[in-house]
Length: 168
Image (cartoon, rainbow, N blue to C red; front, side, top):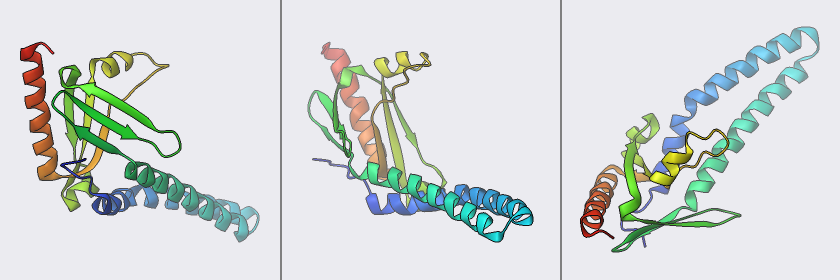
């Protein structure tokens, strides 16, 4: 289905390294809070605070990783089909002629493992970004190998240009 597979294992490593700064920040906040709390009460409250903060960061990181495992996409001659979801599944079919932007991002953790994330936006997503009540994001294809991301971008741009010239 995916000619350019999502690199799940590399993505996990990249997310862990990329979120390390986030973990250190919240851990230091937890230590400061526990120090302040332990002066007035007991060390138990401080440890509970640190454990709670570490637990929340771990849960949110884990949910992000699990959700990316359930992303699938396919290309055919006229459209990109994007499927995602764990409990509630969604499928989005985007004709190549409707794609407006293809953005490739490589954060610090991804750079270490040679992977990138591709964001695809259409006019519909872009028009709703100005509405504060309804922000929509187009398909996000995470953790592609660097070469695969550029190859997929080239294919999508070629298909976009072909469909616009033919008036599809």
